[in-house]
Image (cartoon, rainbow, N blue to C red):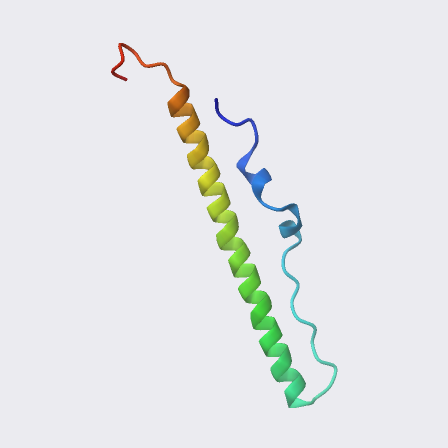
Length: 80
């Protein structure tokens, strides 16, 4: 029997909040800006990983549901 749960329910709810950007430095010190750029890139990497993971979760869920429906269908004369 196919699952009654929506695939989107499998994606962690906290992901709806998104990934916050790094905090801007309050100084003009170049080292602070380099650290900011590195931190911002890390946050972008995190956001991109979540996107790929969410798509993968939904794809696997949909495949699971398709397999459950296919398995639950009656076979006619043992052929279909």
